[in-house]
Image (cartoon, rainbow, N blue to C red; front, side, top):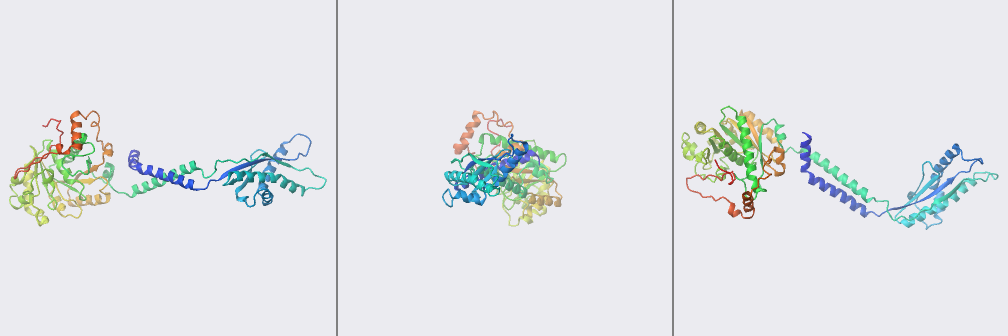
Length: 498
Protein backbone atom coordinates (compact mmCIF):
# COMPACT_ATOMS: atom_id res chain seq x y z
CA UNK A 1 0.00 0.00 0.00
CA UNK A 2 1.15 3.51 -0.80
CA UNK A 3 1.18 6.51 1.51
CA UNK A 4 -1.94 7.78 -0.24
CA UNK A 5 -3.77 4.54 0.60
CA UNK A 6 -2.88 4.88 4.27
CA UNK A 7 -3.99 8.51 4.27
CA UNK A 8 -7.24 7.55 2.55
CA UNK A 9 -7.96 4.89 5.13
CA UNK A 10 -7.02 7.23 7.94
CA UNK A 11 -9.40 9.85 6.56
CA UNK A 12 -12.31 7.49 7.15
CA UNK A 13 -11.44 7.41 10.84
CA UNK A 14 -11.20 11.16 11.37
CA UNK A 15 -14.42 11.06 13.37
CA UNK A 16 -12.90 8.49 15.74
CA UNK A 17 -9.69 10.47 16.12
CA UNK A 18 -11.70 13.59 16.88
CA UNK A 19 -13.82 11.68 19.39
CA UNK A 20 -10.71 10.21 21.05
CA UNK A 21 -9.13 13.66 21.18
CA UNK A 22 -12.16 15.18 22.87
CA UNK A 23 -12.79 12.20 25.15
CA UNK A 24 -9.15 11.85 26.23
CA UNK A 25 -8.57 15.56 26.78
CA UNK A 26 -11.99 16.14 28.34
CA UNK A 27 -11.67 13.12 30.61
CA UNK A 28 -8.25 14.19 31.82
CA UNK A 29 -9.55 17.70 32.43
CA UNK A 30 -12.52 16.45 34.46
CA UNK A 31 -10.32 14.17 36.55
CA UNK A 32 -7.86 17.01 37.17
CA UNK A 33 -10.65 19.32 38.25
CA UNK A 34 -11.87 16.73 40.76
CA UNK A 35 -8.46 16.58 42.47
CA UNK A 36 -7.80 18.99 45.34
CA UNK A 37 -5.20 21.56 44.22
CA UNK A 38 -1.77 21.69 45.83
CA UNK A 39 0.17 24.92 46.39
CA UNK A 40 3.89 25.46 46.86
CA UNK A 41 5.95 28.11 48.63
CA UNK A 42 9.73 28.49 48.61
CA UNK A 43 12.04 30.11 51.13
CA UNK A 44 15.69 30.71 50.29
CA UNK A 45 18.68 30.68 52.65
CA UNK A 46 22.32 31.58 52.07
CA UNK A 47 25.32 29.68 53.44
CA UNK A 48 28.46 31.64 54.36
CA UNK A 49 31.51 29.58 55.24
CA UNK A 50 34.10 30.95 57.67
CA UNK A 51 37.31 31.97 55.87
CA UNK A 52 40.53 30.48 57.24
CA UNK A 53 42.59 33.53 56.23
CA UNK A 54 41.96 37.21 56.26
CA UNK A 55 42.56 37.46 52.52
CA UNK A 56 39.93 37.22 49.79
CA UNK A 57 38.18 33.96 48.90
CA UNK A 58 40.29 31.43 47.08
CA UNK A 59 39.22 28.92 44.47
CA UNK A 60 39.42 26.08 46.98
CA UNK A 61 37.35 28.00 49.49
CA UNK A 62 34.63 28.63 46.90
CA UNK A 63 34.49 24.93 46.04
CA UNK A 64 34.39 24.11 49.72
CA UNK A 65 31.52 26.52 50.27
CA UNK A 66 29.51 24.98 47.41
CA UNK A 67 30.13 21.52 48.81
CA UNK A 68 29.04 22.74 52.23
CA UNK A 69 25.85 24.16 50.68
CA UNK A 70 24.99 20.74 49.27
CA UNK A 71 25.57 19.16 52.68
CA UNK A 72 23.41 21.72 54.44
CA UNK A 73 20.60 21.12 51.91
CA UNK A 74 20.39 17.56 53.17
CA UNK A 75 20.37 18.68 56.79
CA UNK A 76 17.43 21.03 56.21
CA UNK A 77 15.01 18.12 55.93
CA UNK A 78 16.46 16.17 58.84
CA UNK A 79 14.02 15.14 61.53
CA UNK A 80 15.77 17.25 64.19
CA UNK A 81 15.46 20.44 62.15
CA UNK A 82 11.81 19.69 61.29
CA UNK A 83 11.07 19.05 64.97
CA UNK A 84 12.63 22.40 65.85
CA UNK A 85 10.49 24.11 63.14
CA UNK A 86 7.31 22.35 64.32
CA UNK A 87 7.54 24.14 67.63
CA UNK A 88 6.78 27.48 65.96
CA UNK A 89 3.72 26.41 63.94
CA UNK A 90 0.47 24.60 64.58
CA UNK A 91 1.19 21.04 65.69
CA UNK A 92 0.80 18.40 63.02
CA UNK A 93 1.05 20.69 59.98
CA UNK A 94 4.63 19.77 59.07
CA UNK A 95 4.85 16.63 56.95
CA UNK A 96 8.36 15.53 56.05
CA UNK A 97 7.07 14.24 52.71
CA UNK A 98 5.93 17.76 51.78
CA UNK A 99 9.23 19.50 52.65
CA UNK A 100 12.16 19.41 50.24
CA UNK A 101 15.45 21.31 50.01
CA UNK A 102 17.86 21.65 47.12
CA UNK A 103 21.10 23.53 46.60
CA UNK A 104 21.05 26.00 43.72
CA UNK A 105 23.82 24.94 41.36
CA UNK A 106 27.06 26.96 41.42
CA UNK A 107 25.76 29.17 44.25
CA UNK A 108 25.66 29.24 48.05
CA UNK A 109 21.85 29.25 48.07
CA UNK A 110 19.42 26.62 49.32
CA UNK A 111 15.74 26.55 48.27
CA UNK A 112 13.33 25.18 50.88
CA UNK A 113 10.11 24.16 49.15
CA UNK A 114 6.89 23.16 50.92
CA UNK A 115 3.69 21.88 49.27
CA UNK A 116 0.31 21.99 50.98
CA UNK A 117 -3.40 22.22 50.08
CA UNK A 118 -3.42 25.64 51.81
CA UNK A 119 -1.14 28.26 50.17
CA UNK A 120 -0.73 30.31 53.37
CA UNK A 121 0.12 27.25 55.43
CA UNK A 122 2.73 26.24 52.83
CA UNK A 123 4.40 29.65 53.21
CA UNK A 124 4.26 29.48 57.02
CA UNK A 125 5.87 26.03 57.12
CA UNK A 126 8.60 27.04 54.63
CA UNK A 127 9.47 30.08 56.73
CA UNK A 128 9.40 28.02 59.94
CA UNK A 129 11.85 25.49 58.51
CA UNK A 130 14.08 28.27 57.16
CA UNK A 131 14.06 30.11 60.51
CA UNK A 132 14.83 26.96 62.47
CA UNK A 133 17.79 25.87 60.34
CA UNK A 134 20.34 28.60 61.32
CA UNK A 135 19.89 27.78 65.03
CA UNK A 136 19.98 24.07 64.26
CA UNK A 137 23.23 24.27 62.27
CA UNK A 138 24.74 26.53 64.93
CA UNK A 139 24.07 23.94 67.62
CA UNK A 140 25.55 21.22 65.41
CA UNK A 141 28.76 23.18 64.85
CA UNK A 142 29.14 24.27 68.48
CA UNK A 143 28.85 20.73 69.70
CA UNK A 144 31.74 19.67 67.47
CA UNK A 145 34.34 22.39 68.11
CA UNK A 146 36.66 23.17 71.02
CA UNK A 147 36.18 25.98 73.45
CA UNK A 148 38.98 27.94 71.78
CA UNK A 149 37.56 27.81 68.31
CA UNK A 150 34.24 29.54 68.26
CA UNK A 151 34.19 30.62 64.60
CA UNK A 152 31.25 28.94 62.86
CA UNK A 153 29.65 29.05 59.46
CA UNK A 154 26.72 31.40 59.19
CA UNK A 155 23.33 30.72 57.58
CA UNK A 156 20.71 33.40 57.07
CA UNK A 157 17.40 33.77 55.27
CA UNK A 158 17.90 35.65 52.01
CA UNK A 159 14.30 35.42 50.76
CA UNK A 160 11.31 34.44 52.93
CA UNK A 161 8.44 32.42 51.50
CA UNK A 162 5.20 34.08 50.41
CA UNK A 163 1.79 32.53 49.81
CA UNK A 164 1.27 31.69 46.12
CA UNK A 165 -2.36 31.14 45.11
CA UNK A 166 -1.42 29.47 41.82
CA UNK A 167 -1.62 25.69 42.28
CA UNK A 168 1.32 23.57 41.19
CA UNK A 169 -0.79 20.45 40.81
CA UNK A 170 -2.77 19.26 39.10
CA UNK A 171 -1.47 20.94 35.95
CA UNK A 172 -4.70 21.31 33.97
CA UNK A 173 -3.05 22.21 30.68
CA UNK A 174 -0.45 19.46 30.80
CA UNK A 175 -2.94 16.81 31.93
CA UNK A 176 -5.40 17.80 29.18
CA UNK A 177 -2.71 17.59 26.50
CA UNK A 178 -1.47 14.24 27.80
CA UNK A 179 -5.03 12.90 27.99
CA UNK A 180 -5.75 13.99 24.43
CA UNK A 181 -2.49 12.44 23.23
CA UNK A 182 -3.25 9.21 25.07
CA UNK A 183 -6.73 9.16 23.52
CA UNK A 184 -5.27 9.61 20.04
CA UNK A 185 -2.70 6.91 20.74
CA UNK A 186 -5.36 4.43 21.85
CA UNK A 187 -7.55 5.32 18.86
CA UNK A 188 -4.64 4.91 16.44
CA UNK A 189 -3.79 1.54 17.94
CA UNK A 190 -7.39 0.42 17.74
CA UNK A 191 -7.69 1.56 14.13
CA UNK A 192 -4.43 -0.16 13.19
CA UNK A 193 -5.60 -3.42 14.79
CA UNK A 194 -9.03 -3.15 13.17
CA UNK A 195 -7.54 -2.45 9.73
CA UNK A 196 -5.18 -5.39 10.15
CA UNK A 197 -7.96 -7.79 11.09
CA UNK A 198 -10.60 -6.32 8.77
CA UNK A 199 -10.69 -8.11 5.41
CA UNK A 200 -13.55 -6.20 3.82
CA UNK A 201 -13.06 -5.14 0.22
CA UNK A 202 -12.80 -1.36 -0.02
CA UNK A 203 -10.49 -0.32 -2.81
CA UNK A 204 -9.31 -1.32 -6.23
CA UNK A 205 -6.00 -2.33 -4.69
CA UNK A 206 -7.78 -4.81 -2.40
CA UNK A 207 -9.19 -6.52 -5.47
CA UNK A 208 -6.00 -6.47 -7.50
CA UNK A 209 -4.07 -7.96 -4.57
CA UNK A 210 -6.28 -11.03 -4.98
CA UNK A 211 -5.08 -11.37 -8.56
CA UNK A 212 -8.48 -10.45 -10.04
CA UNK A 213 -8.96 -7.95 -12.88
CA UNK A 214 -10.82 -4.80 -11.88
CA UNK A 215 -13.42 -3.60 -14.37
CA UNK A 216 -14.64 -0.54 -12.49
CA UNK A 217 -16.58 0.82 -9.56
CA UNK A 218 -20.16 2.01 -9.18
CA UNK A 219 -20.99 4.90 -6.89
CA UNK A 220 -23.69 4.37 -4.30
CA UNK A 221 -26.88 6.27 -4.95
CA UNK A 222 -29.60 7.07 -2.42
CA UNK A 223 -29.93 4.17 0.00
CA UNK A 224 -28.80 1.34 -2.26
CA UNK A 225 -28.58 0.93 -6.04
CA UNK A 226 -31.69 -1.19 -6.07
CA UNK A 227 -33.15 0.31 -9.21
CA UNK A 228 -32.03 0.26 -12.80
CA UNK A 229 -32.22 4.07 -13.02
CA UNK A 230 -30.94 6.71 -10.60
CA UNK A 231 -33.10 6.86 -7.51
CA UNK A 232 -35.15 9.91 -6.61
CA UNK A 233 -33.76 11.66 -3.55
CA UNK A 234 -30.16 10.66 -4.21
CA UNK A 235 -27.46 12.85 -2.63
CA UNK A 236 -26.89 14.97 -5.75
CA UNK A 237 -29.74 14.39 -8.21
CA UNK A 238 -28.55 16.91 -10.77
CA UNK A 239 -25.20 15.17 -11.19
CA UNK A 240 -25.74 11.57 -10.18
CA UNK A 241 -27.12 10.51 -13.57
CA UNK A 242 -23.99 11.59 -15.41
CA UNK A 243 -21.77 9.93 -12.83
CA UNK A 244 -23.86 6.77 -12.86
CA UNK A 245 -23.71 6.59 -16.65
CA UNK A 246 -19.98 7.18 -16.74
CA UNK A 247 -19.40 4.41 -14.19
CA UNK A 248 -21.01 1.82 -16.44
CA UNK A 249 -19.39 3.20 -19.57
CA UNK A 250 -16.03 2.59 -17.94
CA UNK A 251 -17.05 -0.89 -16.84
CA UNK A 252 -18.31 -1.63 -20.36
CA UNK A 253 -15.06 -0.40 -21.90
CA UNK A 254 -12.99 -2.48 -19.48
CA UNK A 255 -15.11 -5.55 -20.21
CA UNK A 256 -14.64 -4.95 -23.93
CA UNK A 257 -10.87 -5.03 -23.44
CA UNK A 258 -11.19 -8.23 -21.40
CA UNK A 259 -13.24 -9.88 -24.12
CA UNK A 260 -10.81 -8.83 -26.84
CA UNK A 261 -11.20 -10.72 -30.07
CA UNK A 262 -12.21 -13.99 -28.41
CA UNK A 263 -15.69 -15.28 -29.23
CA UNK A 264 -17.03 -15.05 -25.68
CA UNK A 265 -20.69 -14.29 -25.96
CA UNK A 266 -22.33 -15.84 -22.89
CA UNK A 267 -21.22 -13.95 -19.78
CA UNK A 268 -22.44 -14.83 -16.31
CA UNK A 269 -22.83 -11.96 -13.82
CA UNK A 270 -22.95 -13.10 -10.22
CA UNK A 271 -21.99 -12.03 -6.70
CA UNK A 272 -20.62 -13.66 -3.59
CA UNK A 273 -23.60 -12.89 -1.33
CA UNK A 274 -27.17 -11.69 -1.87
CA UNK A 275 -27.80 -7.96 -1.91
CA UNK A 276 -24.54 -6.92 -3.56
CA UNK A 277 -26.30 -5.38 -6.56
CA UNK A 278 -25.67 -7.93 -9.32
CA UNK A 279 -29.03 -7.30 -11.01
CA UNK A 280 -28.44 -3.55 -11.09
CA UNK A 281 -24.97 -4.06 -12.51
CA UNK A 282 -26.23 -6.56 -15.09
CA UNK A 283 -29.03 -4.27 -16.27
CA UNK A 284 -26.89 -1.16 -16.56
CA UNK A 285 -23.94 -3.01 -18.04
CA UNK A 286 -26.23 -4.41 -20.73
CA UNK A 287 -27.47 -0.89 -21.42
CA UNK A 288 -23.88 0.37 -21.78
CA UNK A 289 -22.91 -2.53 -24.06
CA UNK A 290 -25.95 -1.97 -26.24
CA UNK A 291 -24.97 1.69 -26.70
CA UNK A 292 -21.70 0.52 -28.28
CA UNK A 293 -23.59 -1.04 -31.23
CA UNK A 294 -23.65 -4.52 -29.71
CA UNK A 295 -26.87 -6.49 -29.83
CA UNK A 296 -27.16 -7.37 -26.16
CA UNK A 297 -29.51 -9.82 -24.47
CA UNK A 298 -30.14 -10.04 -20.74
CA UNK A 299 -31.35 -13.37 -19.39
CA UNK A 300 -32.70 -13.55 -15.85
CA UNK A 301 -31.02 -16.77 -14.73
CA UNK A 302 -32.11 -16.49 -11.09
CA UNK A 303 -35.04 -18.90 -11.10
CA UNK A 304 -35.49 -18.65 -7.33
CA UNK A 305 -35.63 -14.88 -6.82
CA UNK A 306 -35.97 -13.24 -10.26
CA UNK A 307 -35.80 -9.45 -10.40
CA UNK A 308 -34.71 -8.37 -13.89
CA UNK A 309 -38.33 -7.85 -14.94
CA UNK A 310 -38.73 -5.35 -12.09
CA UNK A 311 -35.76 -3.32 -13.28
CA UNK A 312 -37.28 -2.97 -16.74
CA UNK A 313 -40.95 -2.86 -15.65
CA UNK A 314 -41.71 -5.94 -17.75
CA UNK A 315 -44.28 -8.63 -17.11
CA UNK A 316 -42.91 -11.99 -16.00
CA UNK A 317 -45.68 -14.25 -17.21
CA UNK A 318 -43.40 -15.79 -19.82
CA UNK A 319 -39.64 -16.01 -20.06
CA UNK A 320 -36.71 -18.39 -19.69
CA UNK A 321 -38.64 -21.23 -18.10
CA UNK A 322 -41.32 -20.93 -20.78
CA UNK A 323 -38.74 -21.14 -23.55
CA UNK A 324 -36.98 -24.12 -21.97
CA UNK A 325 -40.20 -26.07 -21.71
CA UNK A 326 -41.92 -25.13 -24.97
CA UNK A 327 -39.62 -23.63 -27.58
CA UNK A 328 -35.88 -23.70 -26.88
CA UNK A 329 -35.14 -23.35 -30.61
CA UNK A 330 -37.36 -20.32 -31.17
CA UNK A 331 -37.34 -18.09 -28.06
CA UNK A 332 -38.33 -14.91 -29.92
CA UNK A 333 -41.76 -14.87 -28.33
CA UNK A 334 -40.35 -14.47 -24.82
CA UNK A 335 -37.69 -11.87 -25.66
CA UNK A 336 -38.71 -8.25 -25.12
CA UNK A 337 -36.99 -5.56 -27.17
CA UNK A 338 -36.19 -2.61 -24.93
CA UNK A 339 -34.26 -0.55 -27.47
CA UNK A 340 -32.77 -1.03 -30.90
CA UNK A 341 -29.88 -3.11 -29.52
CA UNK A 342 -31.06 -4.10 -26.03
CA UNK A 343 -33.23 -7.15 -25.39
CA UNK A 344 -34.48 -8.83 -22.23
CA UNK A 345 -35.55 -12.39 -21.45
CA UNK A 346 -37.17 -12.52 -18.02
CA UNK A 347 -37.13 -15.64 -15.88
CA UNK A 348 -40.74 -16.56 -16.46
CA UNK A 349 -42.78 -18.44 -13.86
CA UNK A 350 -40.66 -19.74 -10.98
CA UNK A 351 -40.37 -23.54 -11.38
CA UNK A 352 -40.52 -26.02 -8.50
CA UNK A 353 -37.22 -27.59 -9.63
CA UNK A 354 -34.83 -24.84 -10.80
CA UNK A 355 -31.75 -27.07 -10.62
CA UNK A 356 -33.20 -29.75 -12.88
CA UNK A 357 -34.34 -27.15 -15.40
CA UNK A 358 -30.92 -25.50 -15.53
CA UNK A 359 -29.24 -28.88 -16.03
CA UNK A 360 -31.49 -29.87 -18.93
CA UNK A 361 -30.30 -30.16 -22.51
CA UNK A 362 -33.04 -27.78 -23.58
CA UNK A 363 -31.23 -24.91 -21.87
CA UNK A 364 -28.11 -25.72 -23.87
CA UNK A 365 -30.10 -25.62 -27.09
CA UNK A 366 -31.63 -22.30 -26.08
CA UNK A 367 -28.24 -20.73 -25.40
CA UNK A 368 -26.89 -21.92 -28.74
CA UNK A 369 -29.83 -20.25 -30.44
CA UNK A 370 -29.43 -16.88 -28.72
CA UNK A 371 -25.65 -16.91 -29.22
CA UNK A 372 -26.20 -16.86 -32.95
CA UNK A 373 -28.67 -13.98 -32.73
CA UNK A 374 -26.84 -11.63 -30.32
CA UNK A 375 -23.37 -10.22 -29.89
CA UNK A 376 -23.37 -10.46 -26.09
CA UNK A 377 -25.58 -12.48 -23.73
CA UNK A 378 -25.51 -11.39 -20.08
CA UNK A 379 -26.99 -13.82 -17.56
CA UNK A 380 -28.07 -12.51 -14.15
CA UNK A 381 -27.28 -15.50 -11.92
CA UNK A 382 -27.92 -16.27 -8.25
CA UNK A 383 -25.14 -15.55 -5.74
CA UNK A 384 -22.37 -18.10 -5.41
CA UNK A 385 -22.86 -18.66 -1.68
CA UNK A 386 -24.91 -21.77 -1.08
CA UNK A 387 -26.31 -21.93 -4.61
CA UNK A 388 -25.68 -24.80 -7.03
CA UNK A 389 -27.62 -22.99 -9.76
CA UNK A 390 -24.70 -20.68 -10.52
CA UNK A 391 -22.39 -23.65 -11.06
CA UNK A 392 -24.83 -24.97 -13.65
CA UNK A 393 -24.75 -21.63 -15.42
CA UNK A 394 -20.94 -21.48 -15.26
CA UNK A 395 -20.77 -24.82 -17.05
CA UNK A 396 -22.48 -23.17 -20.04
CA UNK A 397 -20.81 -19.74 -19.92
CA UNK A 398 -17.84 -18.34 -21.80
CA UNK A 399 -16.84 -15.92 -19.05
CA UNK A 400 -17.93 -14.46 -15.74
CA UNK A 401 -18.14 -11.08 -14.03
CA UNK A 402 -18.13 -10.95 -10.22
CA UNK A 403 -19.96 -8.13 -8.43
CA UNK A 404 -18.60 -7.13 -5.02
CA UNK A 405 -20.11 -4.74 -2.48
CA UNK A 406 -17.94 -2.02 -1.00
CA UNK A 407 -17.13 -2.76 2.68
CA UNK A 408 -19.39 -5.81 2.63
CA UNK A 409 -17.62 -8.43 0.54
CA UNK A 410 -14.70 -10.06 2.35
CA UNK A 411 -11.44 -11.18 0.84
CA UNK A 412 -11.78 -14.68 2.29
CA UNK A 413 -15.11 -15.35 0.57
CA UNK A 414 -13.85 -13.70 -2.62
CA UNK A 415 -10.87 -16.07 -2.68
CA UNK A 416 -13.20 -19.04 -2.33
CA UNK A 417 -15.35 -17.69 -5.14
CA UNK A 418 -12.31 -17.31 -7.38
CA UNK A 419 -11.41 -20.91 -6.60
CA UNK A 420 -14.90 -21.95 -7.75
CA UNK A 421 -14.39 -20.12 -11.04
CA UNK A 422 -11.03 -21.83 -11.51
CA UNK A 423 -12.57 -25.22 -10.74
CA UNK A 424 -15.31 -24.67 -13.31
CA UNK A 425 -12.81 -23.65 -15.97
CA UNK A 426 -14.67 -20.42 -16.73
CA UNK A 427 -12.38 -17.37 -16.99
CA UNK A 428 -13.15 -14.57 -14.57
CA UNK A 429 -13.20 -11.52 -16.80
CA UNK A 430 -13.15 -9.11 -13.90
CA UNK A 431 -14.93 -7.66 -10.90
CA UNK A 432 -17.20 -4.66 -10.38
CA UNK A 433 -17.08 -2.92 -7.01
CA UNK A 434 -20.57 -1.66 -6.17
CA UNK A 435 -21.89 0.84 -3.60
CA UNK A 436 -18.79 3.05 -3.49
CA UNK A 437 -19.50 6.01 -1.16
CA UNK A 438 -19.72 9.45 -2.72
CA UNK A 439 -16.81 10.74 -0.61
CA UNK A 440 -14.48 8.09 -2.09
CA UNK A 441 -15.24 8.79 -5.74
CA UNK A 442 -11.87 10.48 -6.28
CA UNK A 443 -10.04 7.27 -5.33
CA UNK A 444 -11.51 5.62 -8.43
CA UNK A 445 -11.04 8.52 -10.79
CA UNK A 446 -14.70 9.53 -10.93
CA UNK A 447 -16.17 12.94 -10.78
CA UNK A 448 -13.66 15.02 -12.71
CA UNK A 449 -15.45 17.28 -15.11
CA UNK A 450 -18.90 16.85 -13.62
CA UNK A 451 -18.63 19.37 -10.82
CA UNK A 452 -17.41 22.43 -12.61
CA UNK A 453 -20.00 24.32 -14.62
CA UNK A 454 -22.34 21.38 -15.15
CA UNK A 455 -25.41 22.45 -13.22
CA UNK A 456 -27.44 24.40 -15.71
CA UNK A 457 -30.74 25.99 -14.82
CA UNK A 458 -32.56 22.98 -16.24
CA UNK A 459 -30.65 20.42 -14.20
CA UNK A 460 -31.04 22.51 -11.03
CA UNK A 461 -34.78 22.67 -11.61
CA UNK A 462 -34.88 18.90 -12.08
CA UNK A 463 -32.87 18.46 -8.88
CA UNK A 464 -35.31 20.66 -6.98
CA UNK A 465 -38.27 18.67 -8.28
CA UNK A 466 -36.68 15.35 -7.40
CA UNK A 467 -36.13 16.40 -3.81
CA UNK A 468 -39.18 18.53 -3.01
CA UNK A 469 -41.75 17.39 -5.65
CA UNK A 470 -40.98 13.73 -6.33
CA UNK A 471 -44.53 13.04 -7.53
CA UNK A 472 -43.85 15.31 -10.54
CA UNK A 473 -40.46 13.86 -11.44
CA UNK A 474 -41.24 10.17 -10.93
CA UNK A 475 -41.41 8.34 -14.29
CA UNK A 476 -44.87 7.17 -15.18
CA UNK A 477 -45.28 3.48 -15.92
CA UNK A 478 -48.09 1.89 -17.83
CA UNK A 479 -48.35 -1.85 -18.07
CA UNK A 480 -49.89 -3.43 -21.15
CA UNK A 481 -50.46 -7.13 -21.40
CA UNK A 482 -47.93 -8.76 -23.71
CA UNK A 483 -46.16 -5.47 -24.52
CA UNK A 484 -42.71 -4.86 -23.04
CA UNK A 485 -42.27 -1.46 -21.43
CA UNK A 486 -38.94 0.25 -22.05
CA UNK A 487 -37.15 1.43 -18.91
CA UNK A 488 -36.45 5.10 -18.30
CA UNK A 489 -33.44 6.14 -20.32
CA UNK A 490 -30.36 6.83 -18.24
CA UNK A 491 -29.34 9.82 -20.30
CA UNK A 492 -30.46 13.14 -18.82
CA UNK A 493 -33.39 14.75 -20.63
CA UNK A 494 -31.21 17.72 -21.53
CA UNK A 495 -28.98 15.53 -23.68
CA UNK A 496 -29.86 14.58 -27.21
CA UNK A 497 -30.62 10.91 -27.58
CA UNK A 498 -29.18 8.99 -30.51
